[in-house]
Length: 121
Image (cartoon, rainbow, N blue to C red):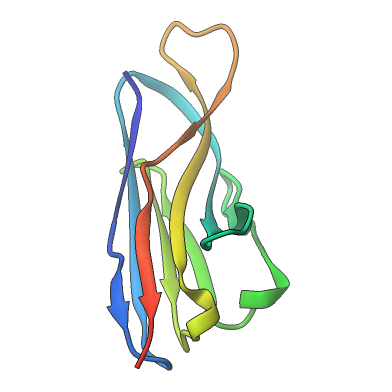
C-alpha cells in the first residue's frame, strides 16, 4: 500500500522558515510529478508548488521567491523549503504525488495526511 508521509510543520513567527518533507513508501514502480498543496480554514485546497521527475519546478504566484521545492528521486522524497513566512501562509499543507504502483496498469494520484503550518507572532 502506497503512503505519503509529511513532516516538518509547526508554529513559526512571521519572517521565519520551515522545511517540509514528504516520503513516499510502498510498492512503487515510478513516481512522476510531486507537489505541495495547502488548505486554509474555509478555503479550497490550492497548489503551492509542483516538481516534475526531472526536477522542473512550478510555483504559485503567492509564494514565488520565498518557497523552493526539490526532490530526491532515490529516496522518493519531496521537500518544500519555506522562507520569509507570512501569516497568510498558515494552512494545512498536503503532499501530492502522481505515481504507478508495482504491477499497476495505470498511474494514479496519492495524498499525504497533511501537516499544519502556522505563522503567528
